[in-house]
Amino acid sequence: MKSIAVFCGSSDGTDSKIKSEAYQLGKTFGEQNITLVYGAAKIGIMGEVARGVMDKEGDVLGIIPGFLETKEIVHPNLSELIVTNNMHERKVIMYEKSDGFIVLPGGFGTMDEFFEVTTWGQLGLHVKPIGILNINGFFDHLLAYCKTMVERGFLKQDNLDAVVVDNTIDGLLEKMNNYKPLPAPNWLNKDRL
Ligand code: AMP
Image (cartoon, rainbow, N blue to C red; front, side, top):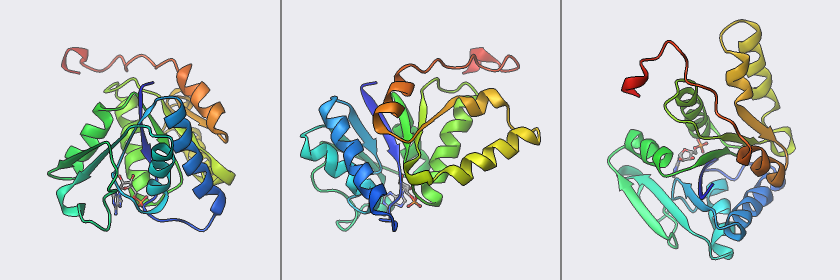
């Protein structure tokens, strides 16, 4: 993977371990020459990941819709900034520019991005790995909820298993590097993908 999109909170949260792991993830990207693709902000957990990459002089591509682009939010030291017309365009460009996706703790915005990119994966619209970095059990309840979806017949176990989860950065990157995509569902018109 040459570039990875990170979805994470625009807030700091209350757990200092989450902030330090986000920073560490950024440093790892810098050390492994992985370009960070993210929402361009200097605030919250987003800003921590970017700071980690920048401290290692790595590449950071920020993508932000025009209505969010203010000096208070946009990181001043990005390698590249793309300003889009709206949130939808931003997400499509983030997905296109990345070889994989990592989800860190966050709020609704993070969940929106996570669920959209997993949905696109289960429809066969992309075959890129999606990883959850489960820092201090932050995602335990979400994963339990996903298990309920499987048990009650709303989600296929294979589609849940396609999301890789680990509580360490190295473990997560290794699983993502070894990821084997599921075949596209056979009911899809593959000529139109
Ligand atoms: P949230 O988890 O609700 O804090 O939202 C964070 C996610 O939504 C990020 O991955 C961003 O892509 C997007 N986002 C939400 N708020 C902002 C913001 N103020 N600046 C930049 N991106 C944001």
